[in-house]
Length: 480
Ligand code: ADP
Image (cartoon, rainbow, N blue to C red):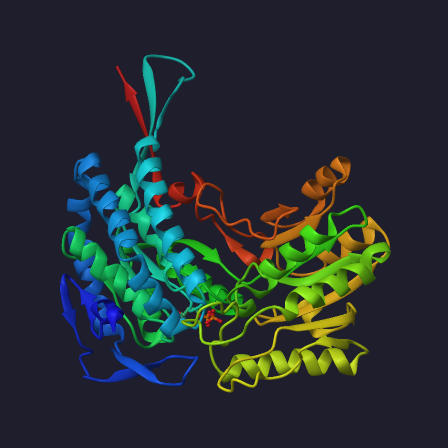
């Protein structure tokens, strides 16, 4: 198989590819077939501490390397990602399940993050601020924060690391990363690529295994100055608590519960296309997926009808097959969870307008599903679905839609379709979300700050803000 070059069954610690001290391994399976595609080391605290030793030792060298020398390495990394895009995408699909075109898109955006941060790092400027009096100069300078711990989830195993590794390396921080156990190979591939393009040993360390032990070792070590996490709100909150003892800086990309609002004046065909992309991408397993589709009464029937027609066209299957638009869910627990959402909705008056059950393909495949007559007392009004279920709610007035949209502890992405310019500004003011897509269901881009408010997180990834998160501000007073 072409991807075997990047299927690393060992961990990268201090420039060496190692097994777990215990020799234990964990199987990694392809969710589309159930086949074991390889094993990874089951590492814990000891190996992680050695990874932190290596990252701490490599930090002064990487931080003081000439800026353009360091950025040249990032450009090589960018090129290596694109040169190996098809191979890396295949590996991603095999371990994660998403359709190959989505996997290629993920590698491409990962390379774009590397390029963006290589460009942004040249503009990480400080300031000279006027002093209040006397012969003084006030210098404000920016410095790499130090060793950064990274913990990432299984749904975007490559690009979630891209947003963290790229800004870290661009400013001279070194890395200890723990990819998700279900999808470790795309994470390990970052280690292999960084090594291949010539980053000094210890700059990037990748450890797999026990989340609690690896996470624990990262959190309790004072040399790790920042933790960047993407995953569930529950684990994120636990990590914020754990960060207190060493006063680490934290960035948190946590859960979402995105509202997708379609107003009477919307371009309905465009809204349907946007809803499909936003809802069914990665089989509904993204933190920015439309979770609650609110449609104004005047266009409700038309929207539902068109959504059913378009959703029916989606081909479900193994992501490696041509034309497949929806792959399997990550595992059977995920399938059981979406079944719970369907059962809850139907018990409260929801109607299954399409799908609603496991797919004939077996494994963890689930049918693209539309539930109409959704109401605010149903489970998906409060919780993130993380699966291919589109609940469609009916609303009458703008204020009602905004109030429902905000009635959640989450605040990551939100979407609205309307052509009313005044309403667009009201939505901008009133939607309590870190990201708002107006007339678009796909808004992630390297140039913009990705991140949430409320229980959806802290900090931003991408944009110029995504670099600042890896820099510490220092103030120097100089009297003369
Ligand atoms: P998801 O539902 O996306 O898998 P999780 O929060 O469970 O979200 O997992 C995201 C990442 O956090 C994974 O790499 C997982 O192994 C890791 N993780 C889970 N529990 C802990 C923990 N207690 N400490 C540190 N990392 C953890």
